[in-house]
Image: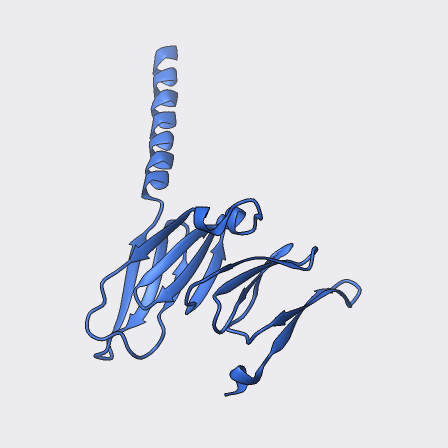
Length: 178
């Protein structure tokens, strides 16, 4: 296969203001998907090793997260990796980009959901929103299923509680003045 023949690839960081290449990193192995940038870090899925995280300024690999990668997203402080038809892994971006946190000490969570029928066919797609994950998957019976998974329930509840507490305080202050 074409990917199997690739022994290295280049990642170039261009300055769009002057049209010059600022950094070039030569990386061994085949590409496993599109890179993502959270400067100065680049996230590079590989065909066989997992997700590599590179520091572009230092030209060095910070770590590899060894997992299958169907797709991944960076959203706010989290890295989300879809590594199976029914599993989403979460990591903190601050930790995976740090050399001081060892791989076995990384904070991580897994979100799993049931799959009806055989999990064959298309690879699920997902989108992370403010407080939920949307996952579109196809069952072995050729049915499309949209899963909505609520995230940060405690954070959402805390924010709502603070809003209500603030509104009640304003009301009490207003009522005490009259």
